[in-house]
Image 1 (cartoon, helix red, strand yellow):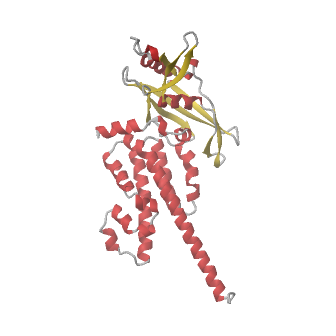
Image 2 (tube, rainbow, N blue to C red):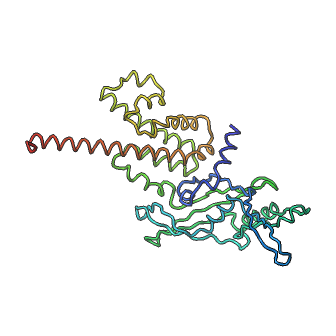
Image 3 (cartoon, helix red, strand yellow):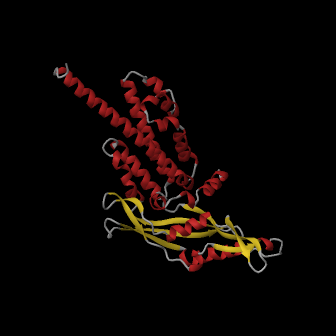
Length: 338
């Protein structure tokens, strides 16, 4: 399990999150990795007019992940999000987080190609270490405010904590959300709005999973995501039995993943093509810890969203087919068609 934790942390870095995801998907107290030493190297040609020679200038700049962190803190571009106070998806304006001039500058070190053979001390690691100390000192805890452009009185607040981990010269940062208003559940309730009429039976499980993830309860959130799949399969089984396509004994003799295959004609294609979603959720419930489950939650939630979207399409089509068939039958019985 130790290797699994390490790999998950390495993969769950800040570049995996859009601004909207850092607000709406990142659970409370979940740490996101920010690599600080995988520096970006750039080069450009220059000309020495005194000696009439060309040479290459190399620059060393922030890593992509540290640069992503700085950009998130400074970003003022609008994002589209669900506003629970307006009850619709709208544009939000981001407030910037104050940063020193030094932290805003991604340049760490530079040298010319004719200096490569010189015995020069490479200082980018040391300078990066200083920047890490600076950002912890200035913004170890910071708030990101966003404002609804439809109603400026709707101001939402997200609080984050930065921590230094590792030792020099292998230091890195972690970003942790430590508070927010509104809750992840409230911000994501817009995602289930299209499901409310056709998929009422899934609303409780879906919103409870969001609430638990928001509170850092990863294993509990997996229980409710798995329950959505179980209810979906149970409903498909009822339809298949009614159509005479399967018997109760055939159904009960199989594990869930095999049941999904048996009911492929009654289930959304995404779950049929990815039956291992159920296995992942079950493994999380029985074998993983809270942090590992919270690491995996965003991908699994998105998978459930895909499944529910497809289920809506199936139910909508069935409804349209039934209504059209009924009208055709009425027209035929009334002899309106010659």
